[in-house]
Picture 1 (tube, rainbow, N blue to C red):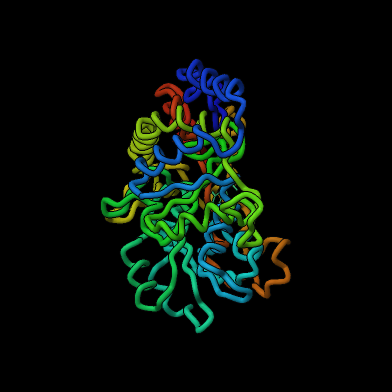
Picture 2 (picture 1 turned 90 degrees about the horizontal axis):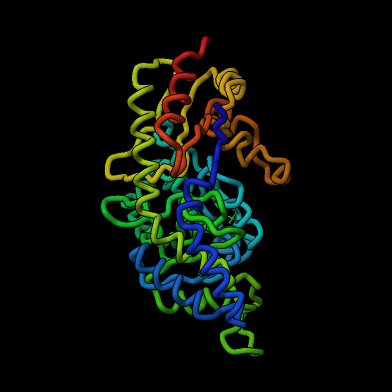
Length: 367
Ligand SMILES: *Cc1c(COP(=O)(O)O)cnc(C)c1O
């Protein structure tokens, strides 16, 4: 049996006719940017996310940068981010001339540890950017409280958790303005690049839309040195089709996770994901942790099972950030995770036979 790490067929095949109809509709519409399809998707995603506004963007990285600009980031402003995240979170900060301040994760949930945030706040701190990693919401009640106390803005990086909730409130609805990504592999992905911002604040929504449209609200009048980063009509139309399925797809991911959890619960050499109280994960990834990671990955690969590592090199050790002053050993939890984590196949359409095969191969693994 061959089980790819990710396979879109289970998502796209059943809705293929609708996807083709949507693309065809746009091709024949004679209108390709900032039209009716975008408006329709933005309204639908805002409703899904239980926020008042959604603003499409070209991708998730741009959406994060637009969020920072919308809240007037200035050179040297400190932005608190987790040490264990995809590099885009840090790139958004440095590309807008901010200074990322890394905070270690909770060793159980792998999300930013709220208990470590206050000690990192200085007179230059202006933002906290929590990342709902692997689909699990951060402890947003605590983070929001800290931000309020210190007069900081919160920008959620919701690229991996569309549909998740913390204490009943959707991720992407907690921060002042929040960013998400519709990269194909996310829980809801475009068939290409895409992203969005979500907010309940009309002023921020208007400003964010301008920042993604050359800093302009009115053609040829430019208020900001903005980006060209918009969600195009074809992607918006395709995303509208996929959004209808998202809750069902997230439930499927949760069922697969529950199946894995149960199967691995007695293995003392393997840690299954731990979900914080109040958090409802949408399992963008199912990340196990073991000191036998590399051998296990080879074993699974030899049996045709695709896995990935999220992430093999922590941000502070990336070549791109050699100028940052960060040292090896400075963020030991992130470093340890990078050596021990392994992401198993989890996606809508992964059959119970396929799940059983993954489970069998892991239970058979000889250390
Ligand atoms: C995917 C991702 C992004 C960036 O999204 P793109 O659309 O690829 O630019 C940002 N943050 C996190 C946590 C991500 O997983």
